[in-house]
Length: 167
Image (cartoon, rainbow, N blue to C red; front, side):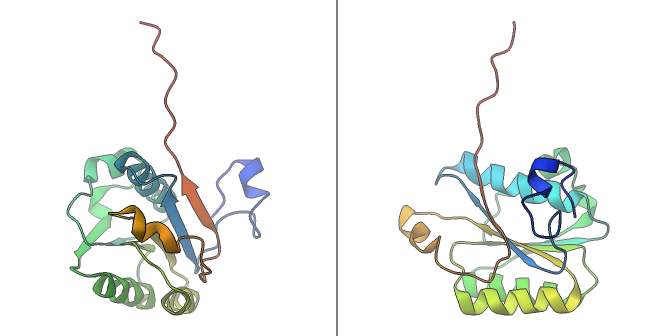
């Protein structure tokens, strides 16, 4: 799935994002603004796919109109709310194994090597795009970010201020 930006596509091993793979996205900081930027980045990627998307989350703070502005229409999204990280990862893996989805997103704080490897294998088997959005409630939860995972690329997304308006 190419970005259509030659500078980015040239840096990726297959000239774009590999389908049937696990991708990891995190905000550039611990704030809500960077977390929203990471979610919208994932939505923008999935907007360019065809078919339903499963979004696994532990919090009720996903704003569907914002996903629509990123190109991911709310009618394409199946929302799964799980209470624990373990339940979110189980939902993520089942969605990846299903094979009938365009992509699966999971909002998780931690992603160790063993569960990430299971997710990568599930994505490879079904050909489904998997995106793990790393969301932390406390800075201590971000401590394991940077540890090895089976994710093919890791993205750090930061919101930048826009230019001042002329009026």
